[in-house]
Structures are given as C-alpha cells and as structure tokens.
Image 1 (cartoon, rainbow, N blue to C red):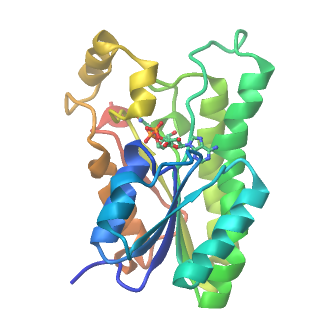
Image 2 (spheres, rainbow, N blue to C red):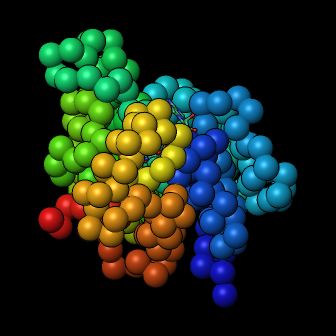
Length: 249
Ligand SMILES: NC(=O)c1ccc[n+]([C@@H]2O[C@H](COP(=O)([O-])OP(=O)(O)OC[C@H]3O[C@@H](n4cnc5c(N)ncnc54)[C@H](O)[C@@H]3O)[C@@H](O)[C@H]2O)c1
C-alpha cells in the first residue's frame, strides 16, 4: 500500500538537491505533488515521468504573494493542500559574522526563515478547512550547533528560528488536526553543499560524522515522508535529526 495516497503535498525547492528527491518519493508513494522552485524551468524529468501526479510551478518562497498564487493554483489542480514541505533554502556566503554584508544576511533570512513562516501562513487556513494536515519544516543540524559546513550566522539564525516556529505552530494548531515537525539534516551532498565545499573539505566533514560519510538526499526524504504520512499521527512539534550521528558526539 502506497503511503501518501489521498495527500496533496506542496514541496518547495524541488528543482535540485533534497527537494527533488522528496518530490520523487512523494509521487512514487501516491501523493499529488505541487513541486515549486524559484527556477523557471525546474520541473524537468519529474514532471515528464509523473505527468498526472506532479504540477511544477515557479515560486519564490521569500515573496508572500508568490505563496498565495501557488497555493491557489495547486488547490485548483489537485484540491486542498494537506501536506507542506518547507524545503527551499539558500546557504548564503561563507563568511564570518563581522564579514557578512547586511544585504546577504537579510537575503538569507528572507528565504530560510521568512519563507518558512510565509509558507505555513499560506497553507494553514486551507488545512483547517480540509480537517487537518502535516507541515514538515526543513531546518539543519545548524539549528542546534555550529556544525561543520554551517556557512554563516544568518543561516544559523534561520535554522534555529525554524525550530521555534515549528513548535509555536504545532501547539497553536494541534486542536485543528495540523501537525508541524522539523527535520534536521547533517551533511548531504547536494548542489548547495557542492557550492560550499571542495573535495578536501568534503572528506574532512565526512570524517567528523560517526557513520563516516555524508547522506544521500533520499535518506532525508524517507523521514520527511514519514512525517508527512499518517504513520506519524501522534507526532507534532518534534525534531528528527538525520546526521549520521554527528550531533551525538
Ligand atoms: N545540503 C546539506 O548538507 C543541508 C544540510 C542541512 C540542511 N539543508 C537544508 O535542506 C534544504 C535543501 O537543501 P539542498 O542542499 O537540497 O539545497 P540545493 O541548493 O541543492 O537546492 C535548493 C533548491 O531551492 C531552490 N531555491 C533557492 N531559493 C529559493 C527561493 N527563494 N524560492 C524557491 N526556491 C528556492 C533552489 O533553486 C534549489 O533548487 C535547505 O533548506 C537547506 O538549508 C541542507
């Protein structure tokens, strides 16, 4: 039995990295997927392969009006949105606190922190109408500690903010059947990571992970799928760390 049959999932940042893996797994597991990304032509192979299951929309998560538009178009195509995966994010520059420009700080929090808020704000009324839903906010191990690969203070601030926002919304909407949880990946070899580190740094980070390697995107998609599905029906306000044991050291 497929695990997401009957769900309509909006997943952000699906043109690359983990978002692409989440969208693929969700479609394979029977969800209707509204896959969004800031890139205009980001639908690619996924929309060709899952013609009836995946709708790709261009979307800037840092723009509240863009959220209103994708939620309305998604609902028109598939019905009320019952799952949101707030995945899109940017790393921002590799810079210490005194060196990051104010502009870069503000752009990073606009996407990584404000985007998560705009997303929850946009889907919650529809989820209430639909009788409930599941929101999965993608944070990072950087929300807990200055982990290897954390690019800057704006990224750390955003990922910590996601933990707090997740708990606030989880408590506020528990009575209306909406569950809100966060997922905290460690090192995952995606486009974002590739722009941050070279081969040597990759080996260094892997050597700090008790499991001795970085994750494949799908290894994060599986816990995200679990939180989106009814299998996690008693979980809200929870944090799932997916880091090969990094934070346990
Ligand atoms: N890669 C890692 O090691 C790692 C670790 C912990 C957490 N994360 C988090 O996981 C999430 C996915 O990261 P990834 O590594 O797959 O990144 P990625 O860079 O490979 O993919 C991110 C996607 O988001 C899109 N995007 C960027 N800005 C956007 C915007 N304003 N609106 C909509 N889409 C936008 C990009 O176009 C891209 O397709 C991010 O929130 C990231 O912070 C990543």
